[in-house]
Length: 99
Image (tube, rainbow, N blue to C red; front, side):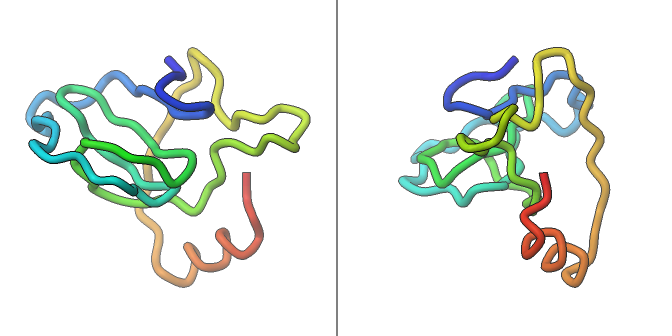
């Protein structure tokens, strides 16, 4: 499901052993691209937003671009697979503005 903010994916299928409660005190600013767990769901912040989920990683991919022909990188029903990348690849993808 996409919700909370334009381009914010709620991702189901989290291994139950990774589930964790939301923060007691939400942050006023979570950086764009932050990957987070809230309960039994994973989400990715598409922009700098407030949030109370537990941050576990970041992606350099831009999840929402209002000027793109298809503004949201993800659509309902898409499958997402995370993979580890090094700092150099992160910087390269971030500089390229990869979607």
